[in-house]
Length: 154
Image 1 (cartoon, rainbow, N blue to C red):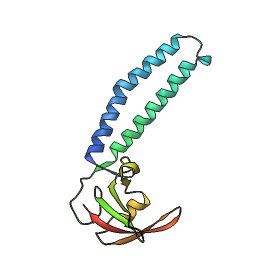
Image 2 (tube, helix red, strand yellow):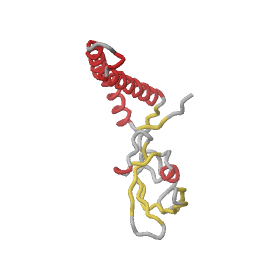
Image 3 (cartoon, helix red, strand yellow):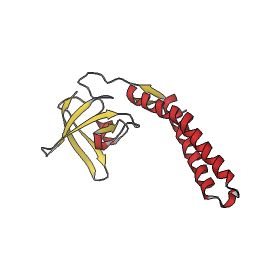
Image 4 (cartoon, rainbow, N blue to C red):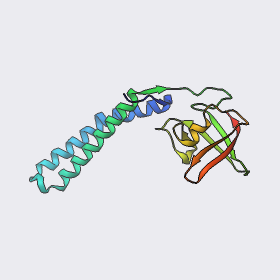
């Protein structure tokens, strides 16, 4: 049984919209491309047909993935708490450094390190869960264990 995936309401709505778009518009476009490619003749050496089939497979794969995510999604709302959880914004500093980094704890589908969004599945996100302002924590990276301190939780 697939495991429950935590996700925000905004991301749930975004994925639902993408799934609807794929099921209606994108499937129809791919079907039209397949029909056109079939009309060109010999399918064994028809590059357009092969490309359309690959596109169809990619669309169907994404539809299945989105259906699975949405079926197993548990929508969480960010809680205004001093304990780090899903949706929390956290400011941390590496022990021995003055640089500050801000992160928001999100689900796997929302993670984007460039936007400061880390998955609760990631080593950093997992290490932050359940901590409070002032707590020190460590987590393993390819460069070894990293130690950080929490400066702020929102």
